[in-house]
Length: 410
Length: 144
Image (cartoon, rainbow over all chains, first blue to last red; front, top):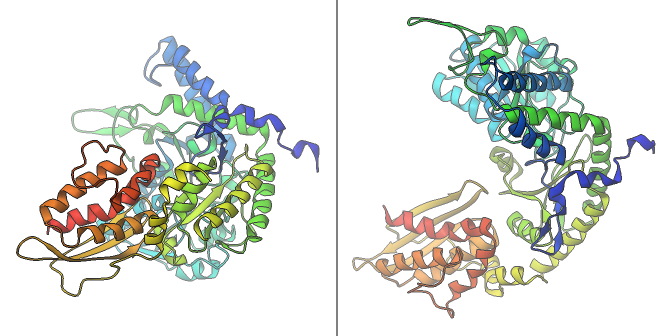
């Protein structure tokens, strides 16, 4: 193996929480990065330092602290721009979460480009955050939502997707990397959308910390992700939108910072990106996200990908050897996420059992109830990897799964 | 094996989880409710027949969920059958106290009670909702 492809051994020391003992005795095995990633010391320290030495409101004053805060806030925007290879920093909007980013697009895209009877395409494996904002449009304005099928392997059925498109289809909103299957979207979907003049939003919550993101290559019109899943703070989300669309769409919320001029009878709006950032934004959180991006860049996102791919393949192989475990989806095109069930044991039991062994996995419907219904299950367990996980941890997990089965099925 | 897990998954819990009692729908019922834990997807449907003297003559549940929620529903139906509503409401309060770790002022549940087997839930705060789902559904059924 190429030496510079190996994640350095002491990487775990960057994450203070990993030395925590669960129930005072067990080493923490954190396999829930898909829910939220742990934070490296440098992000924790920089947040602290920001509040201690530089904090004030942004873009509002001329005093020293306002300048220092604003510089850091706008610097974070440049980091995000280069992280996802957007053409312009005007295309990067800071929100409070990826969820807010999707709500913003749903509302303002409808206002500009859609009317009653127009159609939206989603898939059966979307997270609730990429379903409900569109359901709102259906309930309020009578738009039509169509669902693309999912194949056995856990990917969007591209042919079915294409067959759903009509002249009334205005936008498709799809997960870039499934939070249940770990499968990556077939990039043909973007070109199909482009060919049919359908806008596409990619939900990058599960991909941004694991894959190299290039929004221009992806040919997407909108891309969203959250800070907390990319080793940054919670309370910060990103919306990427093509500049011409963001210029044409109306503002989302009204408030300070998003205005040009206000009189008693009218208002003009600020230029991008301020137009979509009403109110005091998540300032320190944006700075923290910028630091987290630096952190990932220092390791190299390709190295992170390769490391996690190795873990995912190894875990998939090992779990496949256990005849009492069912894995959802297959190994191809999968990154960092594996959902599974132990036969006849509810995921809650599995998760509580593993917790006592020090292992954190997610149990439940993963905010994907339509997908759970499609799979014919009530819930699944899910392990998901971050840069700090190791092969040894997978072995600990496998042994614990065997013990778990023995505990519940005598 | 870890003591907390042994405490949580006592024999009686696994037994009721695997083979729930009073599973189904009461042939005649005058009260019912559906319960749902939106965080995890567990579901329970409850039907009861309460007579003119406020006695629970019949009670059954159906649904799907983890061992803790199914066992809790099963044990609940066993306990509530034949009880007066006012007493059952006191049991509701005692049970929710018990699984949250406060057992000082229980009036209807004692240590020999089968419901006491769910006391181990107190060490797994995220599972309290699993244990109380059926009881909250019962409470909602009475509001009808």
